[in-house]
Image 1 (cartoon, rainbow, N blue to C red):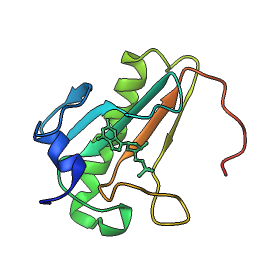
Image 2 (image 1 turned 180 degrees about the vertical axis):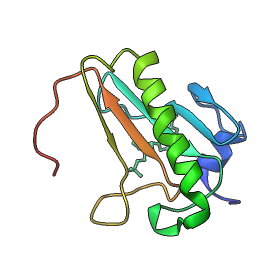
Image 3 (image 1 turned 90 degrees about the horizontal axis):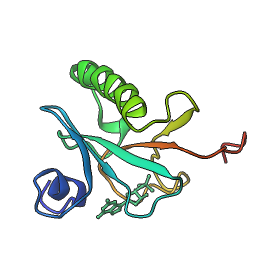
Length: 114
Ligand code: DGP
């Protein structure tokens, strides 16, 4: 999408601290980290959120799950634990309308989700 900040990061039109890239997805450090490890994993294909996904995206989504597991290992949080989340819409405070998964770890998190 023309004005999507994450599409621009994927195309390297905006700099980012990239941690992983393959043909389907891109991962980079969050600019405003909420934990010692805070990485965003995004599909290269633009979709605003999970609401824009379709049957054809099943393989992509499975792939992203596998990449998240690999990154958790690479970033050293697989043993200690980590949280994966995606925000969708206003009540969840989604601020960037390009589907992204937060991978958070390196700190003891609260049991509370909201
Ligand atoms: P969300 O609230 O779920 O839409 O999270 C969006 C995240 O994206 C937020 O934690 C900050 C991060 N972010 C926004 N703009 C940039 C950027 O230009 N670079 C990087 N690295 N992260 C960004």
